[in-house]
Image: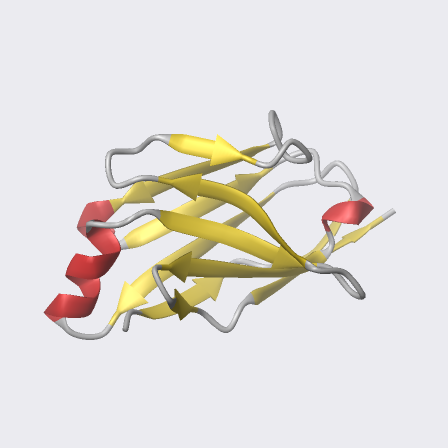
Length: 116
């Protein structure tokens, strides 16, 4: 089990930017699992199913949902046991709770609200 803590959410106007962080905490095993596995960002908008937003592999390869390609960038800093999601050109439809995932572990999420 990996302990994950998301942060960086908030209220922003359409067209604005936010950077989310997902930090792995806990013991050395937990942090090793985080560094050695793919990390994903998901989101759940009100009344909608959970959606995969972006993934980053151990080696840094990335994939994005079509809805965020060209606007969001996922990156990782293994020295800090942290994965980031840079979100630019935000739209109201990006409003959701954003969650970090590694293997079967989830954080509690961080709320992003984009006003029109």
